[in-house]
Image 1: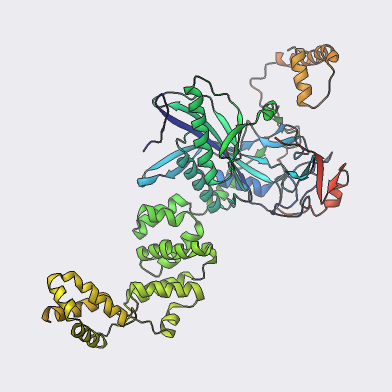
Image 2: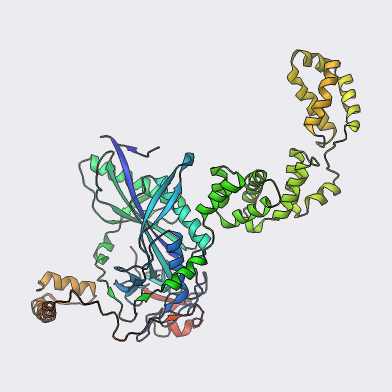
Length: 485
Length: 95
C-alpha cells in the first residue's frame, strides 16, 4: 500500500531521508582518553583535548575506527580505505574548540543498504548514502539559572557515526521501520547500544513532498530533534502536511532547518541557525588520513556476528517459522539467542510461539527485557516437554508457566509440589462422568438435540478435576456414555 | 579572486571578529591581495599529482581504546570565568 496524503488539489507523496547520529560503543572518546560512560558528574569525563585547550593534539581511537567499519560492513556498504577528518567550523558554547572534527568529502563508509520488512511480507530496500565518524558536542542546560546556560563537556569528543540514508523513505511508518531496523543492526554488531533515551541514537529527518506521479524532488526541510520512534512518525507527518498546505495555498517551501516540538507535535523554523550553515570545512591539519589495510577490514568482517536478515532467513528455513514470527524473534539478538536455546531442546514452532506470546507477554507486563527473564531457556524447554508428553494440558501449562515466572522454579518441581499432573488415567474420571450424567438428565436431553452441549459436560469434568483432566480424553469417554444415556 | 565588502563583513561575523564598517574597504583590498597572491599557485598544472596528505610518509597513529584521562573537574574548570556545581556558566544561549 502506497502512503499518500490527500490535499485539496490531489494526492501527495512524502519523500524522506534520515540522518541518524549513533554513538559509537567504546570505552574512550574518538580523539582523547576520557571515558564515554553515560551519566557521570558534570565535566568529570573531560580531557584537555575535549575542553579545547590550546596545544592539545587529537589521536584517533582505533576501536572507534573498527566500529565504524563493522557498521559499514553490516550495512553492506563500501568501505573507503582512505578517509579524511575535516574541521566543521561554528561557534557554540558546547563546542570549545570552535570546530567539530568530522568527515566531509572522504567518509570512512560509502554507499550501502538496509532492508525493511513491510507488512504483508514484502521487503523494501533503503539506500545508505554514507557513514562518517565525528565528535559529539557537549551538553547545554538553559533553565537551571537565570540569564545563564550551564555547560557539561562530558559528551564533548565522544565518537558518533552519522549515518545518512537516501531519500527512499515514502511514509512515516517506513521511517519508523528504518529506525528500528538500523537500531537492530547496530545492536547486533555491538557498535551502538541504540538507547534513544540516553541520546545514543538521534535522528534528523529531511522531508519534502510531491504530487503523485511527479518526477524529481522538491525543496526539503531538515527536521531536527526527532528523538523517539514515535516522534519520527509524527514529525514527518506534520511536516508533510505543512508543506502540502503551503503549496496548495500558492506558497513555496523554503529550504530551512526546523525543530520538532514534541509537546506541541509541530515543527517550527530555526532561523537563527541559518547563518551557521557556512561551516568552512577544511582537512584537519592535526590528523593524518585514516588508512585501512585489506587485512584489517577482512579481520573485522570475519568477526561479524550473524546479522538479523540472515538469522531471520535461517529461522524460516531451518525451523519452519513464518516470516512474521521469525522477524519478531530476531529484532533483538538476546531474544533470538533465547529462542534458539529453547528450540534446541523442543519443537521449534512451539518454542517460537511460547517465546513470543507467553514469555513476551509476561516480560512486557513486568517491564523486563529477555535478559532478565526469570525463566531460563532450559526451563521453558522442560515445560514444553511436559506439555508434549501429556503431563500437562495447555491450560495447566500456562498456569505452571506463570508460576515459573513468579518463582523461577523448574516446571517439574511446580508440577510435583502442587500435584498438577494432567490426569491421564481415565479410570479415576469415569465415575465423575457417570455421576454427572446421572445428576443432570435435563442437560442430557438437550445434548440429544444439540450435540454441542458436550462442551458443557467437558467443562464440568474439568472443573471437578481442577483442570487436570485432558479435555480430548474426557470427550472420548464422555461421548459414548452420553449417546448411550 | 577579489572579495567585496559584504563578503568580508560575513567572514568577520562567522569568525566572531568585530569589524567597524569603515575598516571594510581596506580589509577587502588586503584580503583580495593575499588571495590573488596565493592564486598564482593555480598556474601550475597539478592534474597528475596526488594530493599531499602528510609531509612525512608515516602511517597515522591510532590510540588504544583505554580510559587514560578525566576525573579532573577542578582542572577543567580552572580557567572558566564562571562555574557552578561542576558546570561552566556562560551567557544564556537559546535557540
